[in-house]
Length: 296
Image (tube, rainbow, N blue to C red; front, side):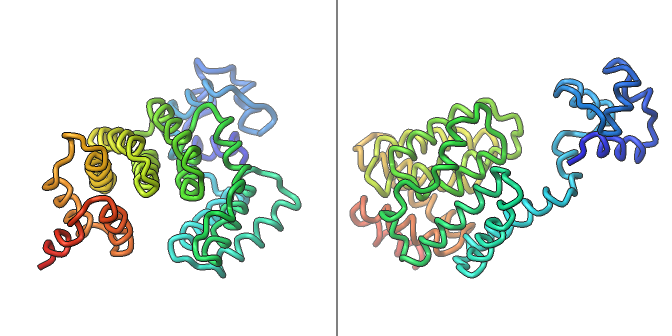
């Protein structure tokens, strides 16, 4: 990714001069070298240049069509589709492609994709037996522990990996998500971080870690309301009330739980509805019958 060259293309597309773009940010000679890729600049100057060009950082990233960027983007898209569909052939292909890439390119993103595809291929092939996966995804866990400030990449990475973690690891990374969410600037993408919280709450509910499940559900509800994340709000309300029931908390309201299940049935796919309903029915007596009555 040649940042200077990309900035130059944006500037030329907008019919702006180097003098105008660099004015008050850096001297013209330095800016000219920056556009030619002969030197770099600090993040403050770079963001000021984008501001001068009236281009957001997100827009700038979307303009990156370099071969390596497009390869990562394509493989990430393929993984998401393969994971959702349980496509073991596609997962095997991703493992093969990333392994080949890693022979000449050591970028962590390719290591992460290779590790995720390997783990989920194993899961799909052994009937989702998580016991055999303890100690896996260590590259991803180490990366997420080390990075001080998360962006979209880190939130998506964690959400993809979270379902294979031990419960103590789920708690640790959900707590870190709460901290990172306070620093996350892209508010229209907060549903990604919110998904981690409701997934953590659901995993902990299934493991009968009700106190922790209730805590993360509460945070997820607050975040979902703040950012108008409808699906996340629905799921979080379900885990909130189910864990409240298990803890005998006055926060439990059966009517609100049933309303949330009705909403989930409308907006989501049947497989997820059945999964979360099964978990909650194991905790709340007579819930299965009441859910069946909803559809009568």
